[in-house]
Image (cartoon, rainbow, N blue to C red):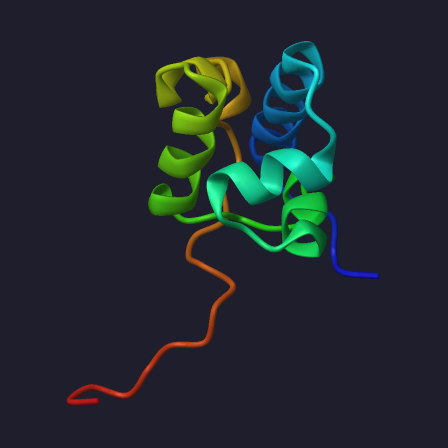
Length: 93
């Protein structure tokens, strides 16, 4: 199991799941609407992935809400990691 994500990422995941459930879509239906793999989308809703802005925008479009409505409260933005967990690419690549 991957390391637990920052609470702010989990908060975004919960907001996405809540809105998707309120819309009446299954994960499979919604993932298809926004053009994401269902398994990948499932990980997003469980807060396992730190998604890109482009994925957030696609999800917000599918939920018919501004991306800002999916974002965490300012108080949740404490103790953020110093940098991304993604490996750095060598310069010039």
